[in-house]
Amino acid sequence: MLPFDSVLDFRIELTEDHELFRKTVRQFVERYLEPRVKEIEQTNEIPRELYARAAEAGFMGLGIPEEYGGQGSDYLNVVIFTEEVSRVCPAFVTSVLVRGLFTTPVLFFGTEEQKRKYIPPLARGEKFAAHATTEPGAGSDVAGIKTRAVRKDGGWVITGQKYFITGADKADYFVVLARTSDPPSRHERHKGLTMFIVEKGTPGLRVGERIQVTGLRGSMPSEVVLDNVWVPDDAVVGEVGDGFRAAMVTYDYGRVGIAAQAVGVIQGVFERSLNYAAQRIAFERPILAFQAIQFYLADMLRDLAAARTLTYWAATMLNRGLTTEAVIAASLAKLFATEAAERAALKGIEVHGGVGVMVDGMVERFLRDTQIMKIYEGTSEIQRLVIIRHLVKKVFGFEV
Ligand SMILES: Cc1cc2nc3c(=O)[nH]c(=O)nc-3n(C[C@H](O)[C@H](O)[C@H](O)COP(=O)(O)OP(=O)(O)OC[C@H]3O[C@@H](n4cnc5c(N)ncnc54)[C@H](O)[C@@H]3O)c2cc1C
Image 1 (tube, rainbow, N blue to C red):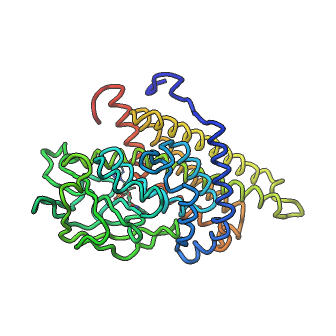
Image 2 (image 1 turned 90 degrees about the vertical axis):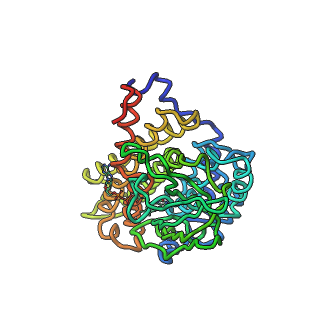
Image 3 (image 1 turned 60 degrees about the horizontal axis):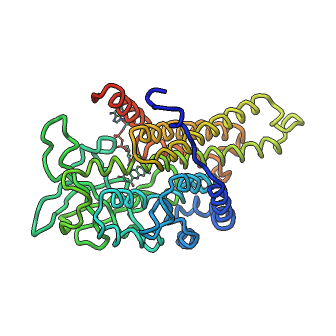
């Protein structure tokens, strides 16, 4: 079982309610999202009314406890929603779930006042939020950020540049990670970072141009500049100096969402490839009759089942609490599912032949989307590091 303790660690706790919820999401996707996907790809914009529809259905409050206006913090529901939406439009789910990168640190580390002020309007879909950690000079190496916050007039002045910030162009609230003291030693670089809430309109906060990335069209990230931004003391999320932990916990939860996004992509590519192979005729037969195509489809289905199982398992673990095992499971799921989604997208293109690389064919976009899934919330290399570090700590009690 190592590094797990018992076979019970491998439980997946799905119920009839989860299946009912999945059907509700499928209806939403077919009715409102599917007809707009081409437009989203072409314009690189998600129509505002889709957010309103999602809010109406309660989807903006997924993963948020009911006492703060959400639908409850069941990560299996988050995963099911993500998967169903990504099957058709992974970018839409990115722009919805990015609020989780704000609500998670506030819910886990914030004060009651912060939770009451910021979470309910996000859960209702009235406000948008973003998470600003990455900088031009530091992504994987979160402790390497250069943004500084210094004490002034009973609060803090934050100065720095953030990069690749999803949803920044729409955000009303940001969490921003900044260095508030020098690290005590080279081995403790993660110490001395603090997370702050910064509201849109605060003097000195500027959202720059959107950064054009290869995929997830409709959800382009932006640069965010903080030029002497003053925030009061009560903008600090958690303890001063403990921001690294707040960021890491946020990603531990977020990763299972990215895994689910990748599962949705595999499902979408698999269905499209199967249907195309059944109707495309070559050499007087449907290409589905060729063994090479059958093998591609079988491999996709293998990856789909494995990725989905890992993802539901990780979400079940997270529902029971943020244990070492849950962190390992979430990273395993993200690592496997995103790499499997890339494989599926490549094979999907092959099954579709020329149509596979036609931009209007709506197949190649999945490959572009998977490149981002492999990077954000920790690259595949970082997932491997997380897995091994947590495993070694648990099994041997020391850090590598
Ligand atoms: C579309 C998009 C949206 C994003 N949204 C957000 C957001 O909303 N908020 C936010 O804060 N950030 C966001 N990010 C940033 C994202 O989290 C980072 O891009 C990611 O963590 C990788 O950091 P980096 O780009 O600086 O790459 P680097 O850290 O420079 O990595 C470059 C390469 O080196 C490898 N590498 C780095 N360190 C190690 C190591 N120790 N061992 C082995 N290999 C290593 C990496 O795996 C990678 O292959 C977004 C990024 C993208 C592309």
